[in-house]
Image 1: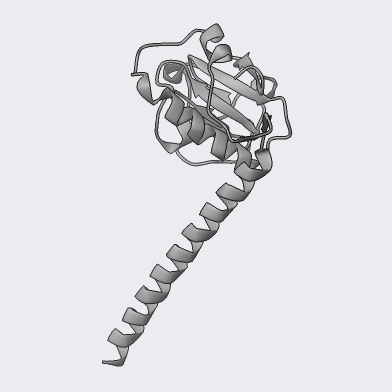
Image 2: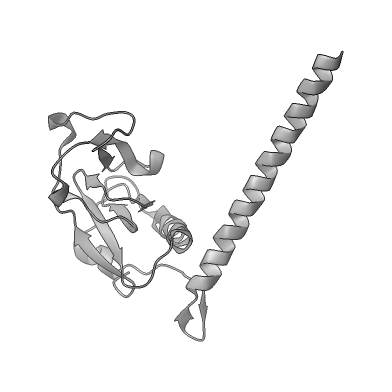
Length: 171
């Protein structure tokens, strides 16, 4: 992990029981990332001093649930969250690919096991390589292809539903 990411501590830990957490984003509010395995780890949105924001275009890593998510925008964190800052030109697509690889690699761990900072730094994740070089371009193309397939399936489903609706109206 430490070869491609700086494993950083959150700039400030915010405890949920002391916060006003909004369910939906509002002007001046930022995502509040916690150890949840759902909703990209986002519990809600909070308004705090921006100096404590963690950078966007990073991965959030929950130390005891082993949840890894791509955080596109700056965010605040709760307890036991590491911020994985890329040492390469990470794009949204390579980040999504790497996050899934991390999730699969951490699958053998169970909730509550807890990992140390050094454990995270030394953890190995399987990534595609060509001639001993990580192929970020492959990751991007792969995720873009998956997104395209998903969009095509959704479009086909909605076209089918629209046709069924139109057929119902004509009857």
